[in-house]
Image 1: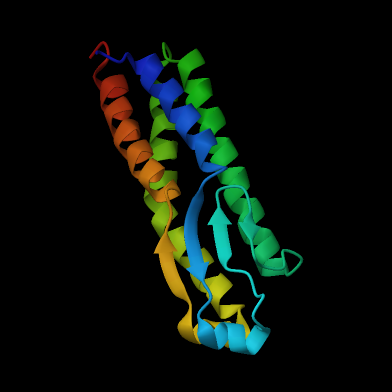
Image 2 (image 1 turned 90 degrees about the vertical axis):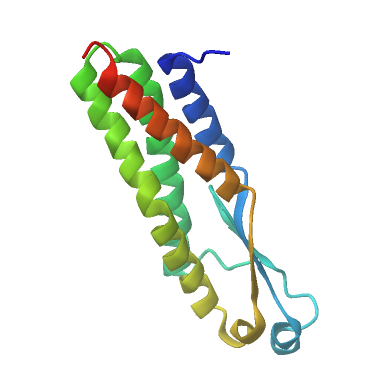
Length: 158
């Protein structure tokens, strides 16, 4: 099956929209956290579009989840816009390179975001277990698709 550049870009956009609903990180509260907060303290889930198990009114958490949401939405629109302007190779390359930069920076962002959430967890931080979510698998697919798309756009009509 041969995917065209437009189909790759559409797949890219659909997968990025999927990440809004998928967990990237699951922070499991351990026994010491349950002792500190009580037995009903929820685990923390960092999704593409939100965070569960944390008070989102805290300015840092509120900023982080909204910033991540905005960047994922921008990424999706940039992939869709690239489909429309694919014949304008320089603009298509610029948008695709911009998306690749966002993908490259994402692990650093997610580390800072996760560390900030853990640091904001007071007594629960001593034994939180960090689990990777399915969103990271989609991230790796997005990275591969973006690189392939970039090469195709760059080599088109060269």
